[in-house]
Amino acid sequence: MQRGHRRDRTRIVTEIPHLALLAGYAAALAGWWGIHRLIRPGLWPAGEAVSFERPWAEFGLAVLAAALTPLVGQFWVRGLLLPEEGAFGPLLASVNQIAIFAPVLAFIGLRGLDRNGVWLGGNRIGERLGAGAVLAMLALLAWSLVRADDHGFLTSLLRVPRYGNLDVPVQVLLEDVTIALLFVRLCAAAGHRVAIGAVALLFAAGHVPTLLATGAPLAELVALLGDAGLAALVLSVLWRSRDITWFWLVHTMLDMTQFTRVTGV
Image 1: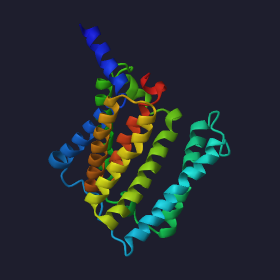
Image 2 (image 1 turned 30 degrees about the vertical axis):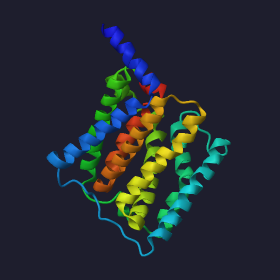
Image 3 (image 1 turned 180 degrees about the horizontal axis):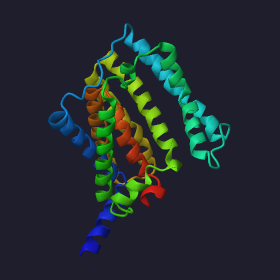
Image 4 (image 1 turned 180 degrees about the vertical axis):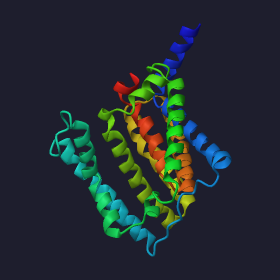
């Protein structure tokens, strides 16, 4: 009976491969809410709301900086950045990630932006990172319980903090800084409710053509609505916390689940 039940769970996850990710993020967001409301109610929001004299112009410049990032990424695709081989491979890969996101980092530096403008402000960062570490483990546990065909929670967890994975948290941190940079400015220009709804809808709409072109089953199209709702929920929580430090660890942990060397999937 148990073996049959396990096969059924595996079949479901195979048909909807991101179901485990949805479970992981949902668990982390629920955990954040519990910490925020019940355990450490004064820990968030971590920073102040940011305003700009010309918010749409500021948003446009941020979009331009973010749009240059994939162009720089083409140098990596063509092997024109540092070679990611040998004992220093993970370290060089991390440097490459910094180079890829150089347009965003240059924008932040040239504009003289404070940390609140990218949701890295506030005090008690150690506590927020600690909360993020707990939530990241909770997210991995939820992912593992749903996934069913992985190596198990503890094995995967012990494989995450390895030198060979160094570039992953670096990349994810830079991604989250970029998301915060754009979203803070869109909130200032259009209001946070409009910004959350627009980004969630764009996220869903951007995946529909690919799903239709590849003949994805109806279950995946329906699940896309869940993805859009989750994206809206994530952005709503991030807006309330005004902090990406805790989410960075959750995001990194769940990104690690895509590597066979970590989870065996």
